Each structure stands twice: as structure tokens, then as C-alpha cells.
Length: 437
Image (tube, rainbow, N blue to C red; front, top):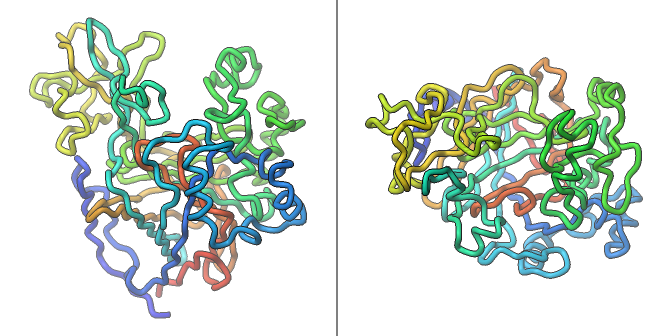
């Protein structure tokens, strides 16, 4: 197939940052084959559920090594419509949430890089995230995700970024990912799941608690990272650090790359992480920073008043306003409680920063929104040379999964694909990367 290069001149549409981070060159996408993939709403379907008695026929097929698509190919939209409406696998349905999303995928490669393009429809582009508000002399949450009970009750506003995520394995080191997909990382003891573990239970844990990683909740992890798994998972049964380090050194982890409409897009990147004993960020720095000091219940940084009309924050008219400045490491200064804050002043709970080290491997990655469609264009080295990344090779096929968060959603309130594959230079994948010449 003939493929050519062209200047893309990507404009970060509706994003309050100049297009300085856009790709200067890339494939002629009109010459690259397309794959249409339907993502669906999974509810609380976990690894324990898909391998349990309520999914007995499917569990048997999975145990035999069959892919979920063996039974469910073409059923994604119907499954999503059923699950999103509520019931056993969705005890807290979100009003108006759709059951499925169709994403158009394209991929290409040259001797150094993998390029991907993803497009999907959304009515309200989530290029904003959480906000705090100054009220009655203190800061409190103003806007967050729609799964929050106070948002559902109308006490808080809804605001959360859109995300496009890619989970990828090497096909060998985590073999169950090949046919079980992202479900091998999803367990009943994660946040928002049936047996969610609370912070008070996590705090005493020697690895995850206050004496270790200081985690407030449980997120994705591989069963292989635990000494035992039960009907609710195995969050607390983590193998020793030496064993985890050995797993990582052998490549027994999954890549997790996340483009974020607020926390990475303005900086022209996607964050780079991996799933092993937890959902980890790669070494270095992510493209965003947490701007909330939970101990003091106040922001860590504010806008530099010198460049923000004398104000340290935003006003309410700048809430989810594309013209409002995005907080970043260049326009921030240390938070000053004596700034003269007024009721109604707003502050983003996160800001942007330049990614560094292995955390900067997904760059440039840019998203544009136009005519009701997000389009994200991705560039990544085939081999980054980092030990928390999978080295990709031409002529190989890799297991991959896709996910989209939209409609101000977080965590499990997303849409996911069944287990897929991407072929780099072949034609046997669900997504086939074309060679650039």
C-alpha cells in the first residue's frame, strides 16, 4: 500500500493553549486503513465475575483460552445498552449515559515510531477537569465527576476530563491478557466496585499504606502480582518487593497509555504508565501535577497574579471556559492564603507540566475536537529503551485494549473494548499498522 508523509499543522481546537505542541509531520491518514471498533459500557463486570458462576459458560471458554469475542463478537452495543441501564452489574446507573461508542482506529509505523489516530463522537468535549471554590473563608470542591453522589444530588457541578486509553502487552509475559483483556486488571476490591476497599483498611498495609506508597484506594493490578486471589480479588496479598522487581525486569506488566483532555492535551502529550502490583506511573514526571494539598485543604499553587489580571485564581465565568488559562508550571506561583480571595474564586485541582524521563514517551500526542468528534493523533517510539516500557518490533502482533472516558466520567464508568490485537506490519490484527515509505 502506498503511504506518504505530509505536514499536519494540527490545531488544538477549543484548547486554551497554542498549537506549539502539535506534530510537525506524520502519515497521510487518508492512505492508512481504518478499523471500526465498538467500545461498550462494562458496569461492574470484573475478572471475578467473568470467571464466576454468573458467567459460567463464558468462564469455561475463557479457561480454554478463548477470546471474549468468541462468544460476544458483534454484541458490544447490545451489551452496553443493557449494562448501562442498571441492574446487577450496575447498581448506580448514571442518567443519560450511552451504552457504546464507535471509535475509528488507524495506525502506521516507520523504522523508529508507531503512529496512531483515534476518532470518536462526543457531544461535550471534556477538556476540563476538577475545580475548587473559595467559599466562606475556605476552599471546597466545586466540580468533579458524575459518579460523585453530590454531583448526582445537584450539590456539586459536573466536570471531568475525557480520556482515550491504550493498554498493551507483549503477548508472552502476561499471557492471560491475550484472551481476557483489561478484565485481568479489574477486580471486585477496586474503587467503585462491589467490595471497594476503604482508606482506613489500606492505611495499615505495609506496602500500600501510610508507611509505604500512601495510596488512598485500590486501582488496577495483575493477579500474578499477588500471592493469592479470592472471590473479591487480592488487594492486600502483594508479593515481596524483590518478586515485583523481578516481574518488572522480565517484562511481566502491561503498558497503560492515557491521553487526557485536560491533564495532558494542553501540553501535547499523553501520560505513560504500567500495570503490575498497582496502576503505576512510569519513572520521571507525568504531564500533569496535583494542585490540591489534602492536609491543608487548599491549593498548592495559584496563578501568578502578574499574568492573570492581578488575580490568583479564576472567576466563575471561567468555569469550563475554553478561553480560561490552563494552570501550568510557567504561570503558577506558590499558593498565598493572603492573596485576597473572594467567594466564588475558582482554582483547578490539577495543572500541566512538561513530562520527563520515561513519563515523556508519549509525545507528541494531540487531540482536536471539531464537529462533535474528538481526533487524537499519537506518536511513540517503537523502542523507548526504558525498562518500564515494552519494546515493539515490526512484524509482530500485540494484544491491545482500548477505553474511552467521556461525559464527565471517571474510573470504571467508561467504555472498553473486548481483547484486540495490533499488528505492526502484518494484516492479522484488529488494527493493522501500515508501513510508511
